[in-house]
Amino acid sequence: MASNVQRTKSKIPFIPGTKPSAQNAQLLISTGIPSLDHVIGGGLPVGSILLIEEDTYNSYAKIMLKYFMAEGIVSSHSLLIASRDTKPTQLLAELPAVAVSSSTKSKTQATDEQMKIAWRYQNMKIVDASPTGGQVFGRFYDLTKTMDSADIEHADIIKWDGNDLKCKAESFENNAYVDLLKTVQETLKHGQFLVSDNPEKRKILRIAIQSLGSRLWLCNTEESTRCDLLKFLYCFRSLLRSSYAVATITVPAQNFDNTDALVERIEHLSDTAVRLESFAGSAKETNPIFRDYHGLLHIKKLSAFNTLAPHNPESTDLAFKLRRKKFVIEVLHLPPELDDTAQREQDDSSAIGSCGSGNSKKLLEF
Image (tube, rainbow, N blue to C red; front, side, top):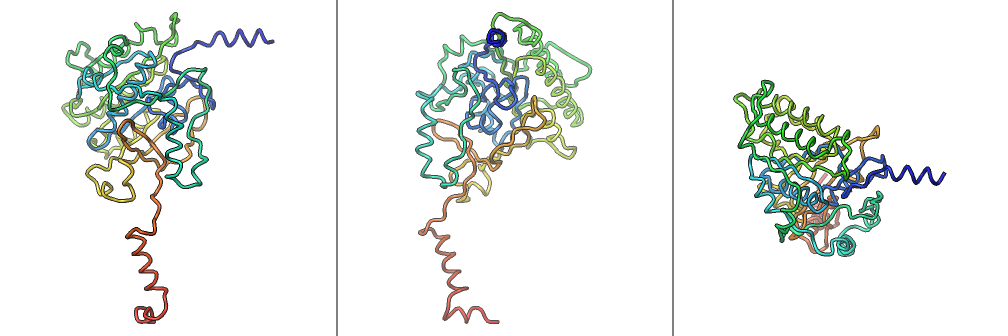
């Protein structure tokens, strides 16, 4: 009996930078942000699409995409970077480096933040308990340092900027979508990332697409633009389903005319979808309630692979903040109301005026 179990375990391929989910045994990879991995259920399932609806100025969505790419290089994954707004070489040059002693930062962070939150949140689960097979899953990155150029040169990276389009199709008006689909298809085939392939050493392909559907992806008419975008996602999703690949796509949802529910249809075609709401330029930027954060993270959709129901996070009231060295996603906690604040003094004075004795009768006459 023991030999049969051992024989079965030997057939499971070891893939660097992956782990099986404890809930549904789905193979997962890290987004590069451990706090985001915990929120979405441990990581991104292989063969899925993560959709990031960009913030107003596309500052934080680009950072999340860089984390995704940096985690792929450190985990020895192959990369396919596609962007028409920013040169892929520029994105690679801005990738953050791995933080020193990243394995111990989670413990020190928990100690430092313990006194800053309410006591009822201290026992909340902050780390996913899925088995990792003894390997590192999800790292912290230092935004003040860039990744070593030698590590980037030795990585398996394919860059696509849409300048030299070679493929055309009558079903698409904008040939950039066709050329990108053909590039993805050839990469999956030549790199032996398909499920039907039997390579000597199995690897994961990470596909990073920045600002899909932006102004540079427009067609002659708005209807053709919507049709091309939706058809691309249909075809792109079918390619990922039969391969060891994971994609992260950022979309400028604020630029779309959502009269025909285009954003909801894009979310439906993705597996995990989040929307970033930045406080920059809004009234919330000066609101003292949100002074510790830079924006809100809205979960629009969670993946449901090998299960009937998606992962249920502990809280959907999430906020993000960009620290000096890292990007953190936390549960939104309202600040405590201290005795020496102006708001407390205002509340106390109003309470005395309404409920006190003596002169209060002059203010309240019935």
